[in-house]
Length: 346
Image 1 (tube, rainbow, N blue to C red):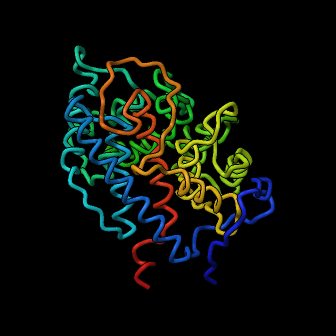
Image 2: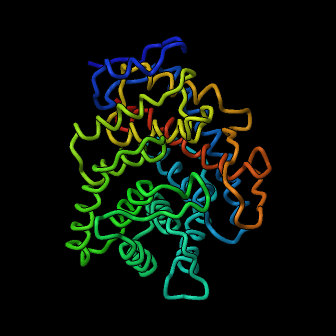
């Protein structure tokens, strides 16, 4: 039976999450809400892709916050049958390939950058651009797999929080990246790594939003059971703030980086809850907090480690990189709430 998302008042708390049943996303949004989400996503994507082109032109490289995640948004829009005027796909793909070639190749000692999150995010972006596996991606896969510890985990650096932080975050991303691009010759080694990573991810007890979000995504990618994933989803829902959003840290206010990431993890893992007010008001929080430019503004909590590059993204200062990442997460979450292309045609 098809059920529509019911409107709820924003005073509801996430405590109701424990009272509802976890089910897959099979319902339909009201037409008005679906149109509002689609308009919001298209507005943010237009801003994101233009800013991505500016960043790439100035920085001469790809970035997680401007390139790879925007590629994921473009792919998500396509999968939902939403026509977006994507004019920068070729530039995004080329910049990601070049970044892997130049700074993610450990054989080039004088150019290699030991930023462990870079190669996994680039591979996720290239998959979104439908880039085929090749010599460049093979080198990236080899490097990523070489970083796996005996227990299946990947040890993260904490240079730029939150985008480059968290062992569970890095482990989940690394597993997904090699799943997407590892050659058949690495199948046996890959399966062994995934099994160890799965056991390690399931054994962790994170308390922070991003690590919980990627614990859920990592479990999904590694093939954990529904009951195991539901326990993590319950913890995520328990972190929801009274305003309907989520915070990166308990001491911070709700922001689009955390909120979009949580909702995306719930949806991608198949645990989006149609009748749960927590999910509904999370989507509503994103819709009402998008600014007039199409962005979601978030303040940085990272110390700069490289020269500032103005990518013409709001708020046009040192907060624009985290704001671009937040806008990507928010857009991914909103697009995931829409019906698939074949559902829309019924």
